[in-house]
Image (cartoon, rainbow, N blue to C red; front, top):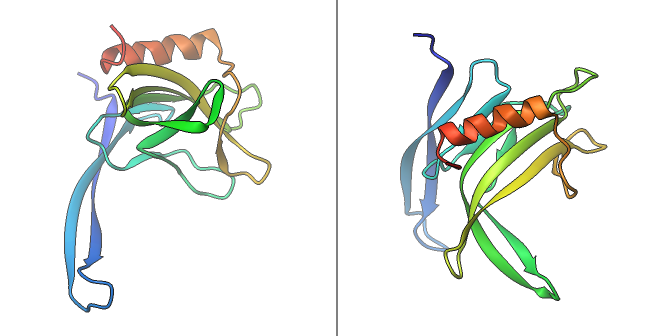
Length: 161
């Protein structure tokens, strides 16, 4: 059997001060894992993964760290925001004719905190003019081959039936 995914397990140390002017502190060691394809061009993150990092570097040499929460505005009420958490996601580096690694397509399972409603969000991250990862604000363009791969991975990881 061919092993398709690489698991990277590492520990992160967090230090908390127990008071605003206190020398007392508490240290917490957290084990986390990052699961990604051996070729590094696709991967996923599960609901309990706290560190969501895509190991593809931007022009500045930094990997993409994804947040666990987000918000959207309500149509007709631009000042009101609905907060959601991002449960699971799958991602794929988009094919590029130039060979440049500058666009990542994602399917995210989001759940609104106010009513528990779950839905899928198709989005992308792209390198901005400064060469750093940025959220793509328009409809994602994706090749049919990349879409098939991404949907297959989403099906394997339970995002879709």
